[in-house]
Length: 492
Image 1 (cartoon, rainbow, N blue to C red):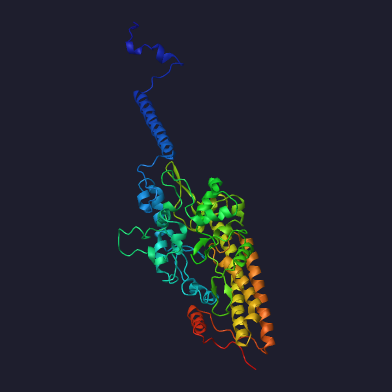
Image 2 (image 1 turned 45 degrees about the vertical axis):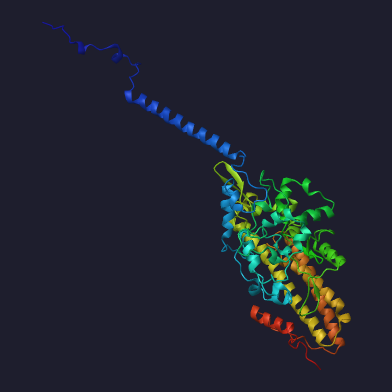
């Protein structure tokens, strides 16, 4: 007997028997997709918010608080420009150093004792240090031994934005004509004439708009004499001209010590020399050779204009104040320093070599200029002693006039390179040309002095004193200043 009875579970269903049937997905998969979508939506929302925030940051924001048009205290600007002020304060670090620069106030008379002889009878033979950052400007100018009771107020001009405030109250000629000590802080916090704030925001910016502007009369006046309108220059050029208010060659004109840029003939060293010759200007009489001398200050702008970066329309700020980015904000770095201390943001923006290679290339150029500078200064020192030897031999002023003129021109050219910052890097070819001219003129001076010595019966070599250290060079200078110079010639 066959049992045809079957259980329900034994009967195959259509789903189970169909090979094309789709299995039912597990329930957790739907929740996973839902949560993934939620997470993606959340992340996209964060990204959108970040983009909006960065765009808002990047927009020029109006100042939170108004700044007085003559506010000399840069700390008061920080409420509106905290990033710039934080970077500005980094210039208080006086330990940064490169091979030929940085903010380390090293003694340049110790490093190069020849300077003591080259500036004999002038303030730079007493004190000559590497400049520190801008935030030290007031302290450093009030402490240097080059400032004396006879120093004019003109020496304050590039040291403080308080000068901008004072020039708003008086004419430039009235400010320059006063003594330096008239504006020195004397402990009275209410003294409106006291200069206390170091180089800062007001020196270069208009407070309400932050527009770059020229605040020092000497640069404006130099443009006028050249027939140029400084108000029509481009913003990019202005990013160098605000530096050129101070980083230039200048002199104090006339009894009123009126600050003047000798640019009427042009910016090359020969054109500046022609200006001084026409004006009959002399800074001091050399204590060793009795030559009428001109001291170059720091002709950074003049040499910059002769270099490749100026030709390519690269401004001073592009290298010394490169842009920084924080979040969505791009701003100018106000920690002014050597580009070698910030290669990634300065040099490497344009030059696609590695940072180490860039450093090596720059320093290699500087070493060549330094070597050429050293040859020129050694020849110049000996030229000064040669002239002093000729005077000891009996040569008079008329006989020595031409040889003194030659050493004046030679040292002016040497100092044009030596006094500027950067050890020649701003315009290496121009620096080498100028140093070669300095060496040539110094050599001519020595040949002329040798002929004078021969006419007076001196044929033995000049006995050059030892100036190999600052102490020895200072002792030699002291002997000349006291009227008891060492004997430089072997008398027959």
